[in-house]
Length: 513
Image 1 (tube, helix red, strand yellow):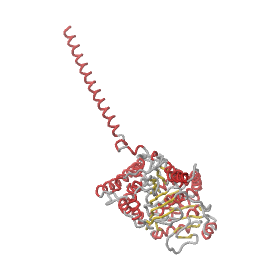
Image 2 (cartoon, helix red, strand yellow; image 1 turned 30 degrees about the vertical axis):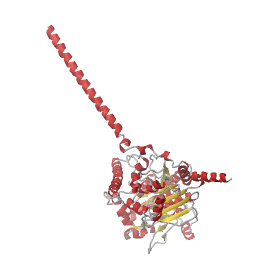
Image 3 (cartoon, helix red, strand yellow; image 1 turned 45 degrees about the vertical axis):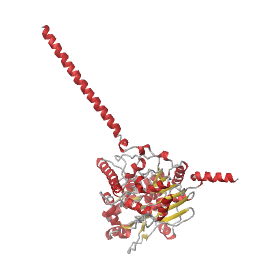
């Protein structure tokens, strides 16, 4: 009996995917939207595995779930002035300066590996405490040093569309910028030469600048983590083909767009009453959890207020400050249960900044969207919805009352937008399995197959010149040059032989005469 019990324990230890794995998760971004995505994955895994997560935004321990507060290590992003956010991050050059003095990612990694709990983990090394590492990656592979030292597979969780400069590093291959928009490209597709040129320029810029910065820092300030490279077993990516232009996907890039969506809950009574007592429907207005509505310039806020006063719909406005003189059809709160509101059948329009979480909530609910994209992937997110026929997009800093009212009335009164939103929603929900089942299956797949490294592309083993086939092209060029040279020599010989033959023949005729 004891032998049987011992055998069972050994089997359990060797098969963590069957009996529950020990997962170490790392969320290096102190952004609520990033944390929402990671936490949605962890909530699923906690039901079957033991999870320890290092995060700057702890929410509390529970069964099978332990948090390590890393707010002293990872930067926590506060709610920002909206205009300042646009000025700082609205352009690619501002967001990613051409010649950064330092690599912020490497500085964060230095602090992370000097963090007490992490330092203890590294000192223990591969002691079998964890079976897998789950993290949101940086461009620099420095965070992967943790899985390298623990000698366990790692899985990446990317809360946006594929980060363009990372794709080659993760998979050894990448799609052509001639038809796949860059993450920070301001649209869903490229219809002409100018658009393709802009996308190629973006493609080159966002690849070269981080690479040069990382290489410069590696030579200037070498670190122990410089020995590692990106080699994830799997990458969970927050995309879906409905909200993303068609493109090739590596086999270990798993789309789980909408993973944060949960079954609706009952709305608070005052909000439900406000919604249901609106015969013309409801407009829901928010700029998410990062930008502060109260910091908007006075003339922009006044534009919104005067416009809302002229529409027959009631308005739910997520506003983080005090505001006076509002029309009776506007309700403001610092927080609204956004998911539950959008699913109410009386919602006619969603006015949003185009954050990916809100995009999926609008798509799932089948609600038209009026977008004011602010920075990063938001212009691209809105571009995808505009192309799908369920949205319109505007510039926040140049908005005026007439154009704002025109867009609102167009989206609400022109039923084609609502019709397209319902079609997109139907396609979004038409999946062979749910996102939660997808996450559970692929996570267990990595555990069952000891890292599932067979999913990695063979392109990762190629050098840059092999990937670009420069060696093959060089051989072909040499062959063509040699062939051309031999052909030329043969032609020269044939020409000389022909001339000599002609001269001999001419002399023979002359002598004969």
